[in-house]
Amino acid sequence: GRDIIHLMQLKAVRFDYIDGPADRAGFIAQAVQTVFTELVEVQADGTLGMRTDELLPIMLHAFKRLLRLLVNKGVITPADISGIEPDT
Image (tube, rainbow, N blue to C red; front, top):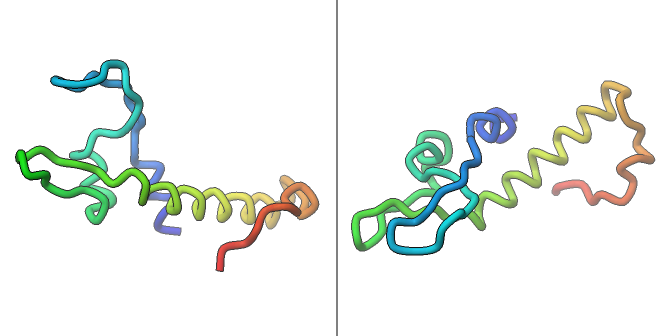
């Protein structure tokens, strides 16, 4: 699906905020904006902000799709993922 392909385009990075915490893990908003435009917005100070909390459901959905694909290909069995709730 679209989400899996788009997630593969993202690159996790480590960075330091100019006026804030150092050694943070995350994504560069400009890069995310090219893939998930709806998750990036311009802040009051003109910088880009990302709603990372809204990325989590997309990631979970993609993960479940990948698990189903692995079952369909015979790499894992349905019993291996029996406790995982399907997406509705």
